[in-house]
Length: 202
Image 1 (cartoon, helix red, strand yellow):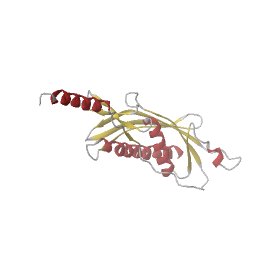
Image 2 (image 1 turned 120 degrees about the horizontal axis):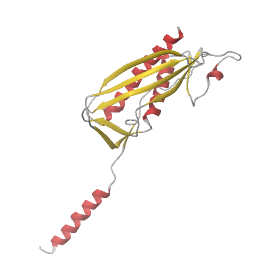
Image 3 (image 1 turned 90 degrees about the vertical axis):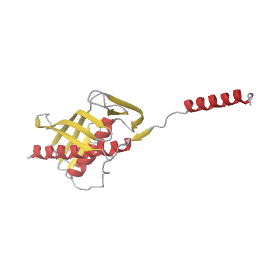
Image 4 (image 1 turned 45 degrees about the vertical axis):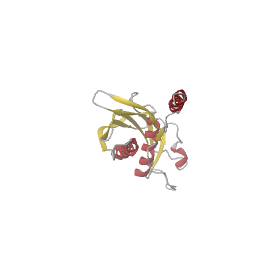
Protein backbone atom coordinates (compact mmCIF):
# COMPACT_ATOMS: atom_id res chain seq x y z
CA UNK A 1 0.00 0.00 0.00
CA UNK A 2 2.83 2.39 0.81
CA UNK A 3 4.38 1.80 -2.66
CA UNK A 4 1.23 3.08 -4.41
CA UNK A 5 1.38 6.52 -2.73
CA UNK A 6 4.13 7.93 -4.99
CA UNK A 7 2.22 6.73 -8.05
CA UNK A 8 -0.99 8.32 -6.76
CA UNK A 9 0.83 11.59 -6.07
CA UNK A 10 2.31 11.63 -9.59
CA UNK A 11 -1.12 10.93 -11.14
CA UNK A 12 -2.77 13.78 -9.23
CA UNK A 13 0.04 16.13 -10.21
CA UNK A 14 -0.36 15.14 -13.86
CA UNK A 15 -4.09 15.82 -13.72
CA UNK A 16 -3.51 19.24 -12.19
CA UNK A 17 -0.95 20.14 -14.84
CA UNK A 18 -3.28 18.99 -17.61
CA UNK A 19 -6.10 21.15 -16.18
CA UNK A 20 -3.82 24.17 -16.01
CA UNK A 21 -2.69 23.61 -19.60
CA UNK A 22 -6.27 23.56 -20.98
CA UNK A 23 -7.00 27.00 -22.48
CA UNK A 24 -10.25 28.71 -21.42
CA UNK A 25 -13.11 28.64 -23.91
CA UNK A 26 -13.82 32.00 -25.54
CA UNK A 27 -17.42 33.09 -26.14
CA UNK A 28 -17.93 35.56 -28.99
CA UNK A 29 -20.92 37.88 -29.34
CA UNK A 30 -22.25 40.05 -32.14
CA UNK A 31 -25.04 42.62 -32.42
CA UNK A 32 -28.29 41.62 -34.07
CA UNK A 33 -29.64 43.94 -36.76
CA UNK A 34 -31.87 43.63 -39.85
CA UNK A 35 -30.46 42.33 -43.11
CA UNK A 36 -31.07 44.74 -45.98
CA UNK A 37 -33.60 43.61 -48.56
CA UNK A 38 -33.32 44.41 -52.27
CA UNK A 39 -34.71 47.83 -53.20
CA UNK A 40 -35.20 49.33 -56.65
CA UNK A 41 -36.56 52.67 -55.41
CA UNK A 42 -34.55 55.72 -56.43
CA UNK A 43 -32.93 57.45 -53.48
CA UNK A 44 -34.16 60.96 -52.66
CA UNK A 45 -31.30 61.89 -50.34
CA UNK A 46 -28.12 60.45 -48.85
CA UNK A 47 -27.32 59.76 -45.20
CA UNK A 48 -23.68 59.11 -44.33
CA UNK A 49 -22.81 57.61 -40.95
CA UNK A 50 -19.57 59.55 -40.67
CA UNK A 51 -18.40 58.45 -37.22
CA UNK A 52 -19.50 56.32 -34.28
CA UNK A 53 -17.13 56.85 -31.37
CA UNK A 54 -17.01 55.05 -28.02
CA UNK A 55 -14.94 55.72 -24.89
CA UNK A 56 -11.63 53.84 -25.08
CA UNK A 57 -12.42 52.10 -21.79
CA UNK A 58 -15.28 50.11 -23.38
CA UNK A 59 -14.23 50.08 -27.03
CA UNK A 60 -12.27 46.86 -26.67
CA UNK A 61 -12.90 43.27 -27.68
CA UNK A 62 -13.50 42.07 -24.12
CA UNK A 63 -16.84 42.68 -22.42
CA UNK A 64 -16.60 45.33 -19.71
CA UNK A 65 -19.01 44.75 -16.81
CA UNK A 66 -19.80 47.19 -14.00
CA UNK A 67 -19.41 45.55 -10.61
CA UNK A 68 -20.16 48.80 -8.79
CA UNK A 69 -20.20 52.53 -9.42
CA UNK A 70 -16.41 52.62 -9.17
CA UNK A 71 -15.28 49.15 -10.26
CA UNK A 72 -15.38 47.39 -13.63
CA UNK A 73 -14.61 43.79 -14.62
CA UNK A 74 -12.97 42.92 -17.95
CA UNK A 75 -13.69 39.37 -19.09
CA UNK A 76 -11.06 37.79 -21.33
CA UNK A 77 -13.27 34.80 -22.15
CA UNK A 78 -16.36 36.88 -23.06
CA UNK A 79 -15.60 38.91 -26.19
CA UNK A 80 -17.22 40.85 -28.99
CA UNK A 81 -16.81 39.18 -32.37
CA UNK A 82 -15.68 42.51 -33.90
CA UNK A 83 -14.77 45.92 -32.46
CA UNK A 84 -17.83 47.44 -30.80
CA UNK A 85 -17.64 50.76 -32.69
CA UNK A 86 -17.57 48.82 -35.96
CA UNK A 87 -20.58 46.71 -34.94
CA UNK A 88 -22.52 49.77 -33.82
CA UNK A 89 -21.83 51.46 -37.15
CA UNK A 90 -23.19 48.43 -39.03
CA UNK A 91 -26.21 48.21 -36.72
CA UNK A 92 -27.09 51.90 -37.06
CA UNK A 93 -26.70 51.77 -40.84
CA UNK A 94 -28.91 48.69 -41.10
CA UNK A 95 -31.67 50.10 -38.90
CA UNK A 96 -31.59 53.50 -40.63
CA UNK A 97 -31.79 51.80 -44.02
CA UNK A 98 -34.99 50.15 -42.83
CA UNK A 99 -36.40 53.28 -41.14
CA UNK A 100 -35.52 55.66 -44.00
CA UNK A 101 -36.50 53.71 -47.14
CA UNK A 102 -36.09 56.71 -49.50
CA UNK A 103 -32.53 57.42 -48.33
CA UNK A 104 -29.24 56.02 -49.58
CA UNK A 105 -27.31 54.89 -46.49
CA UNK A 106 -23.55 54.68 -46.47
CA UNK A 107 -20.48 55.17 -44.30
CA UNK A 108 -17.35 57.17 -45.04
CA UNK A 109 -15.85 54.00 -46.51
CA UNK A 110 -19.05 52.88 -48.23
CA UNK A 111 -20.49 53.36 -51.72
CA UNK A 112 -21.37 56.95 -52.58
CA UNK A 113 -25.01 57.73 -53.35
CA UNK A 114 -24.14 59.11 -56.78
CA UNK A 115 -24.60 55.64 -58.27
CA UNK A 116 -28.20 55.62 -57.02
CA UNK A 117 -29.09 59.02 -58.46
CA UNK A 118 -30.39 59.94 -61.87
CA UNK A 119 -27.53 61.23 -64.07
CA UNK A 120 -27.16 64.97 -63.59
CA UNK A 121 -29.12 64.94 -60.34
CA UNK A 122 -27.37 65.78 -57.07
CA UNK A 123 -28.86 64.26 -53.94
CA UNK A 124 -29.13 66.23 -50.69
CA UNK A 125 -26.46 64.85 -48.37
CA UNK A 126 -26.63 64.57 -44.58
CA UNK A 127 -23.77 63.56 -42.33
CA UNK A 128 -24.43 61.85 -38.99
CA UNK A 129 -21.84 61.77 -36.23
CA UNK A 130 -22.53 59.70 -33.11
CA UNK A 131 -20.65 59.87 -29.82
CA UNK A 132 -21.33 57.20 -27.19
CA UNK A 133 -20.72 59.18 -24.02
CA UNK A 134 -21.17 56.26 -21.65
CA UNK A 135 -21.84 52.53 -21.82
CA UNK A 136 -22.57 50.77 -18.53
CA UNK A 137 -23.38 47.06 -18.38
CA UNK A 138 -24.62 45.84 -15.01
CA UNK A 139 -24.61 42.04 -15.13
CA UNK A 140 -28.05 40.57 -14.45
CA UNK A 141 -29.61 44.02 -14.25
CA UNK A 142 -29.51 46.49 -17.12
CA UNK A 143 -27.51 48.14 -19.88
CA UNK A 144 -27.32 51.93 -20.10
CA UNK A 145 -26.22 53.67 -23.29
CA UNK A 146 -25.78 57.45 -23.22
CA UNK A 147 -25.34 58.98 -26.66
CA UNK A 148 -25.00 62.34 -28.38
CA UNK A 149 -25.30 62.90 -32.11
CA UNK A 150 -25.38 65.65 -34.70
CA UNK A 151 -26.81 65.91 -38.21
CA UNK A 152 -24.86 68.10 -40.66
CA UNK A 153 -25.59 69.14 -44.23
CA UNK A 154 -23.20 68.68 -47.18
CA UNK A 155 -21.26 71.81 -46.16
CA UNK A 156 -21.05 70.47 -42.57
CA UNK A 157 -23.45 73.09 -41.26
CA UNK A 158 -25.09 71.93 -38.02
CA UNK A 159 -28.77 71.07 -38.52
CA UNK A 160 -29.58 68.98 -35.45
CA UNK A 161 -27.92 68.25 -32.12
CA UNK A 162 -29.41 65.58 -29.84
CA UNK A 163 -28.61 63.72 -26.62
CA UNK A 164 -30.41 60.81 -24.99
CA UNK A 165 -29.99 57.98 -22.52
CA UNK A 166 -31.23 54.49 -23.42
CA UNK A 167 -31.79 51.87 -20.72
CA UNK A 168 -32.47 48.22 -21.56
CA UNK A 169 -33.04 45.49 -19.00
CA UNK A 170 -30.98 42.31 -19.34
CA UNK A 171 -33.05 39.19 -19.89
CA UNK A 172 -31.14 37.00 -17.45
CA UNK A 173 -27.94 36.95 -15.46
CA UNK A 174 -25.73 35.17 -18.01
CA UNK A 175 -23.30 36.94 -20.35
CA UNK A 176 -25.50 35.81 -23.26
CA UNK A 177 -28.08 38.43 -22.24
CA UNK A 178 -25.72 41.34 -22.98
CA UNK A 179 -25.59 41.19 -26.80
CA UNK A 180 -29.42 41.22 -27.22
CA UNK A 181 -29.68 44.18 -24.82
CA UNK A 182 -26.95 46.04 -26.70
CA UNK A 183 -28.72 45.25 -29.97
CA UNK A 184 -31.96 46.73 -28.61
CA UNK A 185 -30.14 49.86 -27.42
CA UNK A 186 -28.66 50.25 -30.92
CA UNK A 187 -32.14 49.88 -32.45
CA UNK A 188 -33.56 52.56 -30.16
CA UNK A 189 -30.63 54.86 -30.91
CA UNK A 190 -31.12 54.39 -34.66
CA UNK A 191 -34.81 55.21 -34.30
CA UNK A 192 -33.99 58.53 -32.64
CA UNK A 193 -31.19 59.34 -35.11
CA UNK A 194 -33.58 58.64 -37.98
CA UNK A 195 -36.07 61.07 -36.44
CA UNK A 196 -33.34 63.70 -36.28
CA UNK A 197 -32.53 63.21 -39.97
CA UNK A 198 -36.20 63.57 -40.92
CA UNK A 199 -36.43 66.67 -38.75
CA UNK A 200 -33.39 68.16 -40.48
CA UNK A 201 -35.03 67.65 -43.89
CA UNK A 202 -38.09 69.76 -43.04
